[in-house]
Image 1 (cartoon, rainbow, N blue to C red):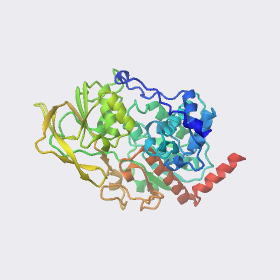
Image 2 (tube, helix red, strand yellow):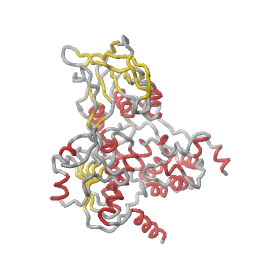
Image 3 (cartoon, one colour):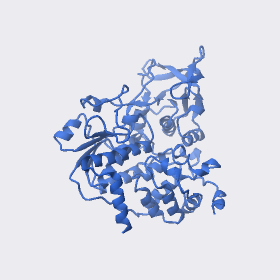
Image 4 (cartoon, rainbow, N blue to C red):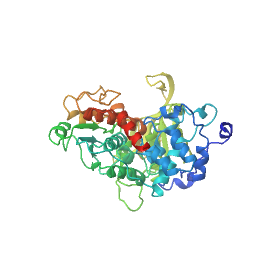
Length: 482
């Protein structure tokens, strides 16, 4: 049986052709058909000690849900995933499975791993599209109130777990839509808004209260939430949303954006809805994006869809050092994004009206490895040249927004402004206050933030009730078996 499974090739996912998709914001991968999903699921070897589960930050029962897909039990597969992951359609689209669960798949040692992420997406999409939605089960009320600050992946996951456990949970979101980086940072062609909204609605069914336009630190401080609003615990999941700039001449010119601003204008202000919105955004004809991560790929591909005739992605290292997902790099190349590797802008030049007209570029070469383990880019003297551009997007990373830090006396942060926690529990140095996700680690993956949210939820539950999460899970499993 195992030998037959080894003969089945990994199933490719159908996609929009590049020449079509560059003119729309529709999702690029189109998803598996039921037949493709069953065939791909049939490749799983059902290992006795599945390393893929250990590779998943939220510990999804991967062999379990794949077995159900192979048996044609698609709704059951979705419910199996949601035992530990309340955002399966999101994770199936944006999580880097190739470096987490799939990289440790046994099949990866001799070929291509099982397409775990694609199967997760299939199961979640099937459950949503077929209307096979089952209301999440919650335990009896505990009488304890928990505030979640931020509705990104860490906050949503923490809220879901705590609501399941019977706690009264309220999410405070600073923006006018829920989802954090999932909604303001990831383009429609990678994560359609309707899918995220569906998964957020599931939280409402569990009794979670959601308050938008609620900036904690301005509306109320953490101390006020606990002392005046009656919250017994607080989870900080505000992300790392403060953009970094390069500190070069000309960055204040009109037409120079941070990736945060550029993507937020497109995503939350719906610049992608051509002709129906009047979003204030410069739709450049010659656009340069600086950076080599997923955010840079998102910005470059968004600029192309907004009408750019030419999009350059400038990255100071080589392609091998790019931190973006291989799939995102591949899609960008297919769509005609020009990769100018080992180059970096050292200044931006403006016209008489203060608008960007060009970038002064410098070529680089790779030297010795730096603290990241990647070879350090070293400038080549005399290699400068001008590149005509009318829009630049800086996508070199983000840092911690200081609002929570500055309005929470005594909260311990590190030298970069990120909150210091116990890595096993998410506990800060303030009793009852927990944190997780990018506000702790800096920019990381969606699933890593979700894992942090789960760990914090377990610790918050034990802090409030004295009961361990493992005990609760064992009790719930016993009830289900009966």
